[in-house]
Structures are given as structure tokens and as C-alpha cells.
Image (cartoon, rainbow, N blue to C red; front, side):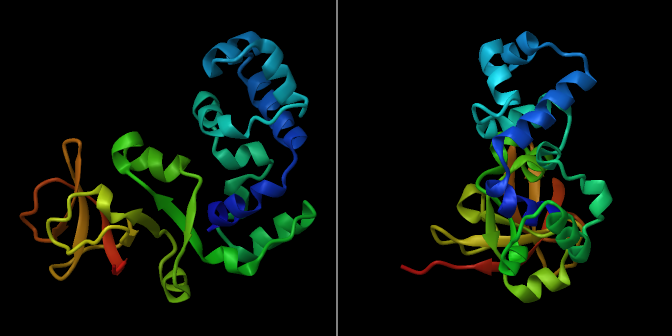
Length: 212
């Protein structure tokens, strides 16, 4: 939940604030501006501009999170582990930063275009786009994500172009469920059974269909 709200308010954070966190992360691992520049494919002068807020480093946040092994939220100065995914604490943390947000944003979940690019775990960790989920779903499930269903093999589901699926990685499947599985490098939707082959990644909660 915290990451969902965080992604909503990041547009209100200044490049200077982000730069301070980049410099802090770089100092923690004793990395020079030249070394960071090489990893990002930019000059050390540009790294300096990022750290001083004279240029925006937002497009490199995914790379920076990987380089420094930090969550993206770190670069906005908010610690995930202190928030504990509590909406009241999220609101309090944002208020301290002088940031307001639309309550409707809490109903937004991570939207994955295609797991084959980054893999399952890295996609959930690094994806920065989101999608509005029904309120009942947000209230009932705390860890859901949305997936464009045309990016997977829909063996057990009728899928139209543009359909969105809502999934929970922690929900325990039973024989009535459709699950997202990984078999090698292929992601599929299958009807769950105890004999199902492949790694079960998540259970489908609901499908949002697009009709032509």
C-alpha cells in the first residue's frame, strides 16, 4: 500500500531532494561520481548535476535502486520499513513532508506490462506505473497487482486485447482458481491442480475485460 501512495506523490518531490538521497547512497558505499557515471552511462559532471538538483535523475531511479540495492522510495526520503504499510502512518509521513494526496490514489496497484522483461520479483519491486483497482479488492487483499493479460499465455482463460487481471501472490489456490505460473521463461494462466507443473506465482482474483 505504501508504494502505491508513494508512486502517486513522487511527482511533487523536488529534484534536489532526490539528489540528496543519491549522494547519500553513493557515500554509503564509497563510490565516486565517476564510478556512478560509468554505471549510468553519463559523465561525472552530470552525476554532480543530479546530486545538486540542477538536472533531474528521475529517469534513472530504476537503475539507481539496483546499483545501490535500495527501494525506489529511498530516493524520495521515505523509509518503507518505518511505515509498515499502514494507511494512517502513510498519511502522517506525507503530512510531515508537506505533501497532500488524493485519497483515491490508495486504490491504485502496481501495473505490470510484461514479466518476461525483468522477471517476476524484479517487476513487482521496480515497476513504477499503477492502475486503479476496485475498492472491495483493495480492502480484502493487501498485496494485489494488475497485469496486462495479453502478455501471458492464457491457457485457462478467455482473454481479449487490453484485458487486465488482478492477482495476489500470497493467496493460497484451490481447484476453482486460475493461477499465474512460470515454466522456464514462459508465463501462463492455468487452472490450479495439485499436479500442475511450473512455479505458481499468484492467484487470479478478477479479470477486467475489454469488449470491442
